[in-house]
Image (cartoon, rainbow, N blue to C red; front, side, top):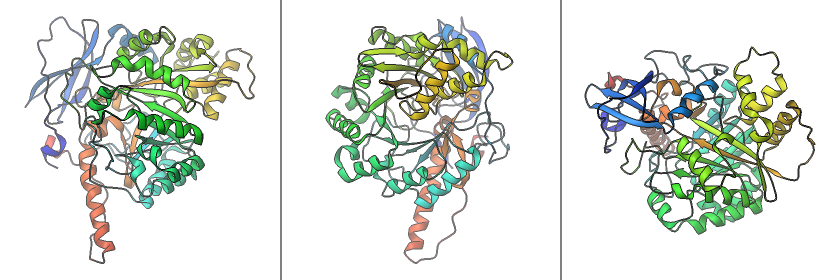
Length: 502
């Protein structure tokens, strides 16, 4: 692999002097230009949290990693030991992040497994971490092998998500979804821009039968938002049509807005209110734009972080949701994910932390030596506050009821008149913000052929994606040659080479 495969030509913001900074933590990161692994410092300055690092070839770089230093320090108390997978699939040879597979240094099993079934897409978004385009598409047999490997490492996996590119354009996406349904996997999700759902009646009917949860790209309401982020300003009507059709089909939907500085920050509250009102939508997963793959030039010192989103939510919902309603997801690093659930009935919206006192409970869960924590409370809250929880699912409603019971709140375990609504904040790392310690606790893994599982942020930041795309495209060409009756080489296992970074 050459340096050009691991590096895109991006405007880079070099760091200035580090005066009046407090070093909070030492870690390792990557150079945003060449992806060499380098030492990094997490520093506190001016009430915010930054990462500072120096590449011996390209100099110093800084990036904002959290917009509220006090909140970042407070999150440390939620950082609990991870739960490793049932088995590891690669040895430790070069050290993190170059042995992903997962290797024995990884500290957390996969709450969410992501299968990128194709690199192709029916859109050409200016913001695309996958840099979607021609390359490869997996076969049904490859996906079935991946699913079997996922079950082997997890036992009963919580969530598998089909992604891309745009997975709905894969000719075998429906049998792939059915294959996942046929295995012992709690939730099957489809990540989509909604374009085929808006147009294809037969496809929608199949989804209504399979009933995957729909992870739905939805960045806002204004033409300028879609023009900047998706390259097509007039997408809203198509997305609204897809959502209405999903409601008619009875499919669960989580909206997934990418929030970019100076583009759609002002639409956060409107997206939440829309989600609360639409019958198909049972949650919103806000993702601060992370600058891997394809993106516009940006200032890494002024990126959107989870703390910024919390302030925007509180201001734009008029206190319907406030920052204290959100708690870190306990299975990954606490600064990566924050989530809240609300019980919604008619016009009433009740965030559950106000009812359950979840913050105190999560603290008890973190400190496992406290005897007064019942297993029922621990299991219920960990299930509800998990990266794998899906609002509106039977499991989420059951965890809610069990949480209430464990906290001494009498609640009818039968059918409830209202519904659950989730808001999650997911701040993925990119080459500017990559933090080795956080990657080692990642619970969202890219599932590849040959059994490899690679933490999502490492896959998109270190050079795995570029190498996997080349090798998977080569395999596809080899299959075509074989189908045409010509001699071909047997497919070799995926191998990742970082020797050029030494």
